[in-house]
Image (cartoon, rainbow, N blue to C red; front, top):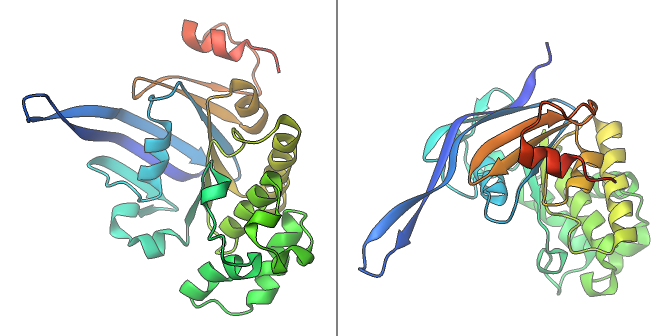
Length: 252
């Protein structure tokens, strides 16, 4: 039996919404989420806008406060960790590459920043290693973000997420703002990193085809609940629920 690197147990998340009568009502965003991620695997999460996909990643990364349930990474309850320590075992990559970098800093400074924060030595060696993994030349280090293409910036984003040797990388719609040809480059980079390092990923997207290509297992979120789940290597979709069958049967 494979060991989960990540486990979520009965996770709930609420948001307080102000009503016209100036009262606050609790709205349930995520309800009773229980799932796991095996080491070296990719878990895909799909669902419509508002289904709770990004909220789930925010909870795992500690960007949102867990109100009910448990999130365990590498046998550690994340509520016992500061965000500083959590960043050493989990990293998140966001969708909008343009807003992920300080435009005044060089790529070298951007990549050095997490290493400086965590007081990690051999910065040059670490940076060269991750650039090699994402297949980008060292000559980019002297450039600023505005001089790079969207695809290059997203690969720099991936490189930065690898610098602290995390156990898990969370990908939040990371190719949705890129052209189709550039999407393929970024996705292939992720898969190379996964194979090379044995990394574990959560891949969130609204695109079923991209998610099927990237993932070993897929969770379908609907209205904040796990509506369905399926193994992407098993193409027998006969036991899936209607909404999932509709999504999963779409051709690549």
